[in-house]
Image 1 (spheres, rainbow, N blue to C red):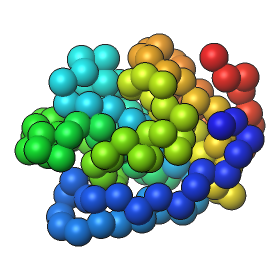
Image 2: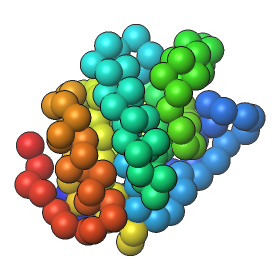
Image 3: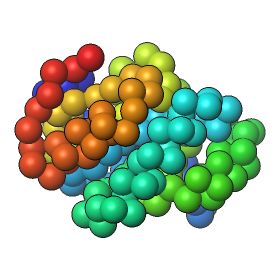
Length: 142
């Protein structure tokens, strides 16, 4: 996935109604689930980063089943995670090659995936991913 363009994804919104397309531009894209404790820890760190860096765009994609939409909405609200939020039936995770959660991608302004991490590796690693979204430098995938 590193070096490839993130495919345009249209997914059901977690906030609001209907579907939406993942915004273009530089961003962190975080795949997560409400029942996943490492995901919740990572989302808390991502929310903190977004508050510190208003230029950081965050997109969250829950892999909770659609019937668990309420749990996913509640988790986002409790964790105070900003940005567009979607729910996935598995298609987006498959398209992006997600093999476990949490998985977070650093996408540059041209929509190219520059780095990613699967599993929670701590706040420093998330800061590295966030910096890629603004300066375009690539790291080696784990």
